[in-house]
Length: 139
Image (cartoon, rainbow, N blue to C red; front, side, top):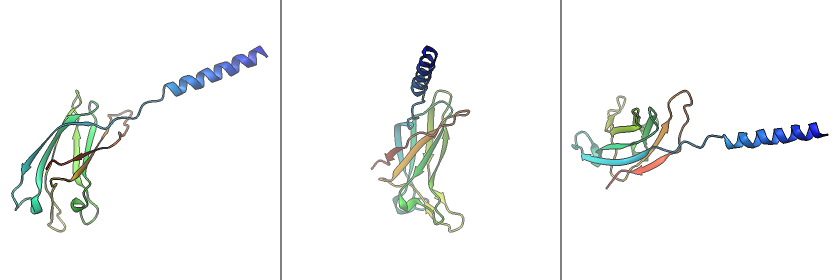
């Protein structure tokens, strides 16, 4: 009976420590600054702008930015955005610029008031995806 109690105690102990060792969710990258430049009307229709985001993420993570405003989504569902790579200290920078759709010739550009979703994928071998940070392009 004592041996059985010992096995139950060890199993409970292993189960408890297994729960304590679960990894925490990866937080979204921070955005420490945002700068906006006006864009010529010929390059950015309907008041588009050029937006540069600067922030911090996990070292060597990929930082993904997507303008989620419906007006910036292409005719085939393309999202206006891109990817930045954080350096060894976690610093990253990305400039969201107008993009021309080669099939239609239309230009999609970020605008003031657009919502940009930003998340990160940590470097291998773990490669975990973070939660999303929503940032509004300044007015």
